[in-house]
Amino acid sequence: MNGRVVFLVWVKLIRQAVAHDLQFRSQAWLHLLASVGELVVGILPVLVLTGYADYDPAIAQASALTVGTFAVTTGLMDCFVSLGLRRFDLALRRGELDLAIIRPVPTVFYAVLRWIEPTELGKCLTGIAILVVATRVYDLDVQPQAVASMLVWAFVGSVAYCAFWADLAFLAFWVQSIQPINDLAAAWRGSGQYPRRFFPRAFQVILVSFAPAALSGSYPVEQLLEPTATLVFAPIVLIAACSLTAFVWRRGLVRYDGAST
Image: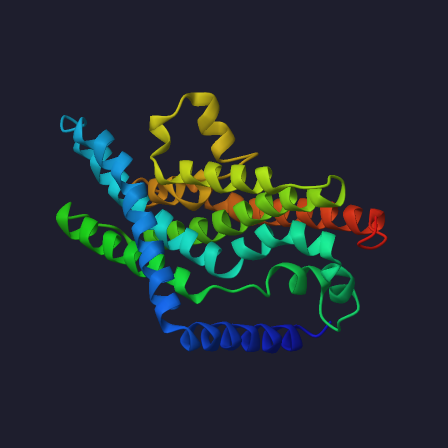
């Protein structure tokens, strides 16, 4: 499949999503305010925790940066990927996947990535604002290589968590309903908005490996504040996560015979 064709299709899908939201401006503004409000509610536990950490300014600093980074990455996920993963179970049972299979675009692309919510990008704007304010308030002297490492890990972490969520969503090929699993994936992702040091050692390992919520939030901030040589592992993580998802997808399609099954 020509990558240019896929890109053009996705651009048209984005335009369609934006046009749809503009036709219902009150709904679009409501969704935008709701997404920002959800972020504000998510900040509250962090503020409570850091309020008792005055003796260690580094904790408050890392917490603020983590919340900002988490807002940006989740805003992008929720705009382009999350809705498609949430709807995959229902689409499978309604036979929409049957139609996706016969379309001249990659099936997984049409089945998952065609559902776009532009209003979720409001989280990104809020997150960027938090990062800018935190950088100035704490007078951080970040180096260009540290910023690059942070951006790379934020991208890799976002893709890795989307792949992890997709692995769970594709279990719909084997079970009747995975709605509770989708809720669990969304809830687990929230752990990425807290610095990893808040969690026991075992959970810290899980958050950067099997269920990589930290890779899209706290871990990129760690690389911003204290850069390490782990950047060389970013391509490995990206390839491994995508390869596993591709394997689960192929196995699911082999089993799938139609909506009636």
